[in-house]
Image (cartoon, rainbow, N blue to C red; front, side, top):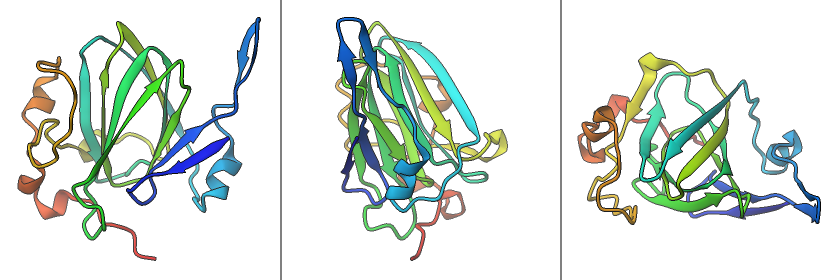
Amino acid sequence: MKIIETEIPGLFIIEPKIYGDERGFFTETFRKSWLTELGLDYEFVQDNWSRSGSGILRGLHYQISNPQAKLVMVSRGEVLDVAVDIRKGSPTYGKHEAITLSEENKRMVFIPEGLAHGFLVKSDVADFRYKCSNYYDPSGERALFWNDPALDINWDIENPVVSAKDNEAPVLSDIPEADLPLYPKS
């Protein structure tokens, strides 16, 4: 397994070891010791699975109550996965990472609490799977406008299919301070 640090503190790309032959392949998709090696103390309590078609963009979502760290992967198809640091006090506040996740590259991304997250389906269909460190709380869900010009995210698509809720989300500069997570102090 290879862990790649990103510019955003706490956001890691994980490349698992793949064992393959003419019969297929085997890989571990989660091991608690991966988090321990990174100095992270999370217990995942919920697994989610979504299926979406080509051009569908979901996000950018985050939780202010019951914040969730996530371990995300694609088991079918390909997505452009995007995480935006919106933690007050973070050295990378307003920055994002865009990572291609696919059934071919088998990469995973660990997203810490306090980042807004979304993805765009690049293949005909994609199965997106993720572990969460906290239970989903609809009352605490918030969204950041997926196409905020200040974020300068290159989604590489003119007209994605986006929910009305995501299309009406505020840009980062219009999010009330009370709705922004705090950067953890060491």
